[in-house]
Image (cartoon, rainbow, N blue to C red; front, side):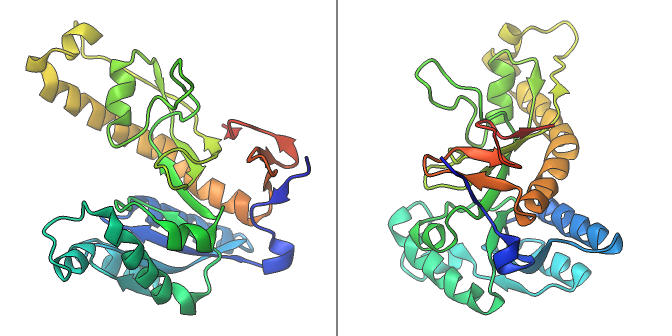
Length: 268
């Protein structure tokens, strides 16, 4: 089967990216900084054209001012409260929120979305409009599977679960965003960072209830290392390689890089 480009620069030119964030936006900042570095070296095949946030207290205004990029804020909690809800758990309202988000993006003519710490689940309106061109980075190796074939380290506690699962190394993974969270096609895997347990402690020790706080602290520390040595390297690089037309996909959803089949993505 012949793969088609996920993004074809010969058809669309420079890839226009909307970055979505809910908090500090460190991954978003790294993508923009990388874009500016490429411009400084001659040219960038992608451009971040707008920031979007679903939280009014996020750092989106700060990043927008720092990089002179427009931003949009649609506070999701305010949206839900306006419809009589005290939480955002009711996903049946999410397509309406995402439709409004899509409308707000229209004038920026974005080709792709890069999620950078965006905490809201995307639904049909955005998934349909952008298709294969919504990207995210996840603090785990998404190619590791359970015996039943499902991905082992998904969700918000992936680093903690990988430590408890006895992994020796941690990786970050970039992937395409699909309806099922953390289950899209893998694009790139980072270089590893080793897991280091506290001196004198075993996994069994860490798994005991009295050591839970220590385990959480350990996971946070490793995730920060992984962000610096994984996320901040592979996410900007993934956006660049997609925008250069180097990634392809065949009708079965297999990923290709530079025409070569890479079912588990490009690996550093």
